[in-house]
Image (cartoon, rainbow, N blue to C red; front, side, top):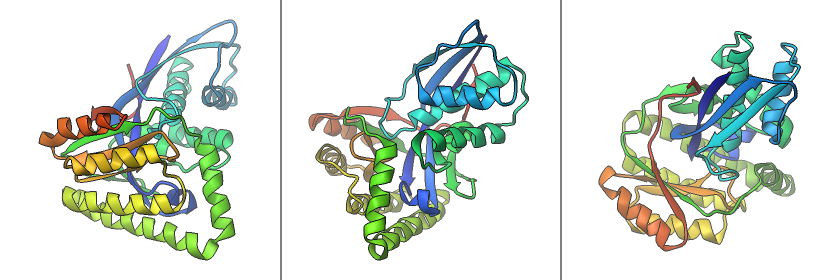
Amino acid sequence: MVTCSAPGKIFLCGEHAVVYGEPAIACAIDLRTRVRVREGKKSKITSPYVAGAVKKISELVELEGVNIDIHSDIPIGSGLGSSAAVTIATLFALNLEFDIGLSKEEVAQLGHEVEREVQGAASPTDTFVSTMGGVVFLPSCKRLKSLDCGIVIGNTGMVSSTKELVRQVARLKDRHPGIIQPIFQTIGELARKGEYLVDKRDYKNIGELMNINQGLLESLGVGCPELAAQIYAARKAGALGAKITGAGGGGCMVALVDFDEKDEVASAIESVGGRAIQTRVTEIGVRHE
């Protein structure tokens, strides 16, 4: 029996545009999904991501059956990389349980393949960050300095479908390519500027870029009133920047804050109906528990 865990993630900038080849900055956060794997007579699988992970491993080694138990701190369908975390933790646990010898890089690649097959289209961001941890500039996979500031997440409690939202944005791009493609390119420029600012630890200007990114995400049609209320409440309470994280349409927003502002920003988010989660960046990716 093997237990492994993998972290969730937030985007500082880049979601949706990253699907079209633009860069993004994502951070692993200290909310984790734990997966326990043990060989069994028959499989007990309810998640399509777990089923996909088992299928990938079964192509490498013969599996007669496996029992998998999941416990997660990450809200499902929230934009915090819950599907990537369960996929990566499952792959890593199966890798160890059956002594396959996959590297973390290979686990990340298999995880991306699983997400792409389940969702129809997916960037490698979530699975890579969940595997490796830390702050990552993609697609180069360059590790950046960790964030020395607070993170407050606001959860709307509304589950959104990454697959459907990616399709929705794709349809918008097909209808208006000359308008939507430049939006993706601008989001990419935010990530490029953000790479420099993260290494300079210039959190004030990172926050400004997050606010600009939020406006561009709204223009893609992935916002909602509940997210907007939490974002503006967080900014009013002193957040350096606040935006959607993940696919949007519900799920979560994220605020970058000075450490002494965390409680006030969390209270502001909850005052407009959100569930606030205070967390931090983690340098620890997938691990054997």
